[in-house]
Image (tube, rainbow, N blue to C red; front, top):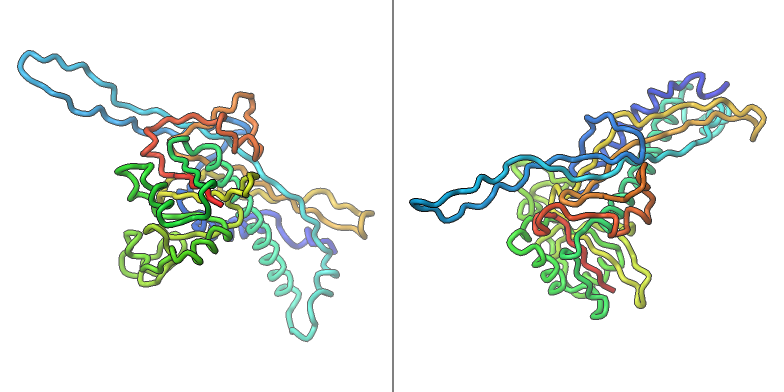
Length: 332
């Protein structure tokens, strides 16, 4: 019996999306929103913002004030699509994979398999979103928010402080340091990591949790007063020696806009291949944006390959660089 005879693809898609939604808070520094119906992939997506109100100026008798515009502008990003097709086992193959001594009923086995498939698909979607977030940071962070110390050596507290200082009086907004495990190891060896209560970094109340799920009373690893997040998806640069990017981020420096349903469909059954199997196809449309920077890649529809997103020439700064809550520190 085919698994598609029992499992509704909409049910699989819903459970997968629920599991992915529970993972999204691990995208620290990213504000997520699922209320949008997105256009076709490659479409430029506008993200409106309120323009800065003009500063006061000297006034007096006989001075004429020139009215300054108050209104909205927008940054741009691009609608992306990610997908994968998965072979699904027949029911008899599925049952045979479980030890009969476990005492599971057919329904329990199927429910467990749905949960396992949903968790696996959601995990891969999360990994893809994490990589695209890194690509956007690599390309979109403005030049004034970049510091390279690769010629000087590995990360130090002084280099982190210098990178934060690029934001001037806005540097205290930086809450996270996203780094490669190699950089984390160097920071540990150098004694630059300290454990602090999460409540000293974030505005937490009572048992409220931060974006990583750390209790308000819990201790988190920090550097320069920022919570450390380790991911080997953080970019490495082919230089000599190899460079590693560390990203210093404010809490909502980026935006993720996605359609609520991670679409899952079953393709026509392949009867004569590998003994016969069903195919589940999972697709996700989303926009990953860096607030304050516009993705202006010139083709129509826009290209959103990793190389295109990481290309700094495809990005335009829209805000004062101090208001872009992202800094890139490149070290050995």
